[in-house]
Amino acid sequence: MKKLRILLLAALFAAVACTAAFAHPPKNVVCSWNAQNSTLTVSATHEVNDPAKHFVLTMTLLENGKQIVFKQYTKQDSAEKFTDSVLLKGMKSGTKLRVILMCNIMGSVESDYIIP
Image 1 (cartoon, helix red, strand yellow):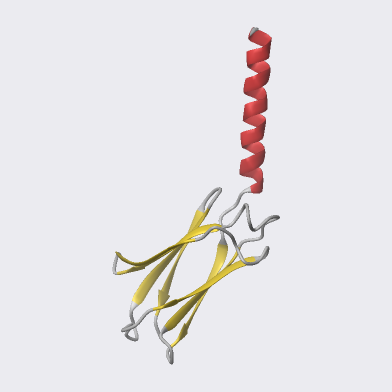
Image 2 (image 1 turned 45 degrees about the horizontal axis):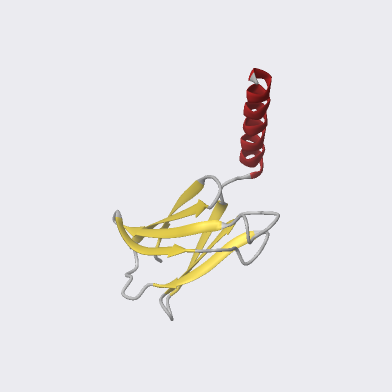
């Protein structure tokens, strides 16, 4: 019985370690501002095998520490990267935003962007 417990614990540890090895946060966040339609487009590298199972789960935008956008996703449109656009009416040139992207499996990335 003791050997079975040790074997089960070892298998559980190996499964968790493998999941962590294949999971990774998004990286290389790129933001672009379209002043004509007040739209911010956010892209990030997030290469995954199956975008229906491993994807960017949330995008949060903060202005001066206050949350102004929170979006949740159920999949990623591409196996190579995450991209989404949000309408931000009333943004003035010089406004500093913080973008936070969180992976559904492990990790997150933060990036600052100043509206041109």
